Structure formats: C-alpha cells, structure tokens
Image (cartoon, rainbow, N blue to C red; front, side, top):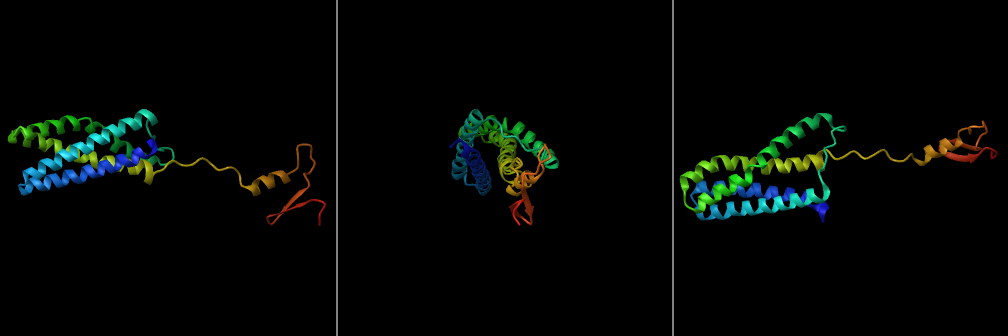
Length: 182
C-alpha cells in the first residue's frame, strides 16, 4: 500500500490541477456556485494529497534522485524541486485564506488573495506531477551490475589455477568440454 502512494499522490496533484483550471474557467464565465464547489473540491483533493504525502514520508523517507546516473538532469530536477517545495509551503495558507474570504462574500479581498494563491497553487500541482515523473518514470534508479553471466563463470573456471594446474575445462565457441575429451 505504501509503495502505491507516490502514484496516488501524482494522480491527486493532476486532479487538483484540472479542478483549479476548471474553477478558473467557471468564475470567468460567471458561475459562482460551480466555481465555489470546484475550488473546494480542489482544496479537498490537495488536502488528501498532503495527508498521503506525509504518510509516505513517515514510512518510506525521501526518494533520492539518481544524480550520479543523470548528472545533467539532476540540475533541472533540483531546481524544480526547490521551487516546488518552497512554494508548496504557502499553498495551504493562501488557499484557506482565499476560500474563507470567498465564503464570507468578501469579494475584493478574495480576488486579491486569489491572484497570488491561484498561480502558486497551480504551479505546485503541476510541478508535483513533474517531480513524480522525473523520479519514477523518466530517470529511474540505475540497477546495480548483474552477477556475471554463466559463460563468464565457466571461462573463469577454465583459467589455470593458482598452482598452475588447469581445471581441465575447455571453452570453445560457447561449448564446454573436459580437457581429456576430444
């Protein structure tokens, strides 16, 4: 279950992104009732994301970007992550503030806060999905070197031993025979 949380979190961020854009389009159309419902839904989805994110961090810790394997991409990843993380800290405060002002029908103050809250919240939702793709799909951890193949083990066994004696195995075009067999 815990292993699925990053995938769920990315989905929640994507859903929040869609709800934010729909909420903006609804208020531009003048549909306040649906705008409110959509923005509250976006907040609820983001709140569920935050709970799932904190649970994942508590049980699994952080997921490191494989910077040794992708040194150039690491610069972009960390720039994106720093901006995402820094702005993400402001989203709950700004979103709650904007929602409260909206429900209190304090339209002018709501608009002023929303002009800051909306683009920051949208940026954090989009970059959250990008961080997920960078960590889990585009730049996966590089697996450790596999064990030597069987042929390499056989070739090693065919080499003379420390005492100078041959193991008696011969490798010829992938076939293994005893030294005394012809």
